Image 1 (tube, one colour):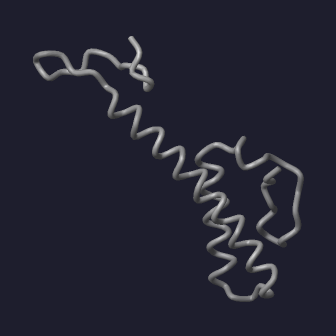
Image 2: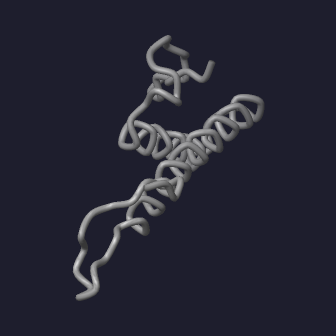
Image 3: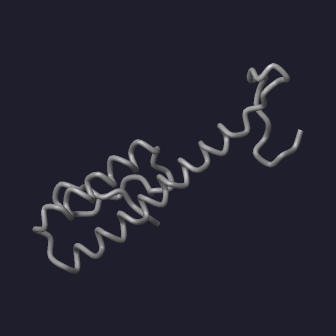
Length: 93
């Protein structure tokens, strides 16, 4: 499982798996990953592990954004152009 790390000291804490994090939690964790890598004071092997985790966080955030965009695009407009409701993402009624 993918676990949320304590970004302050690099130790792993068993908190929430990435797939159970809110978008905001994942985005904040991604920001911490970027900050740690930008500091440049992390050994190479740890930097690689941090980068890999960052990529997983980025992918999770992107997936949520893509899903939100698809939902927005499914808003159904009436004949007058005003929204009348939403339609299921799968195209069903």
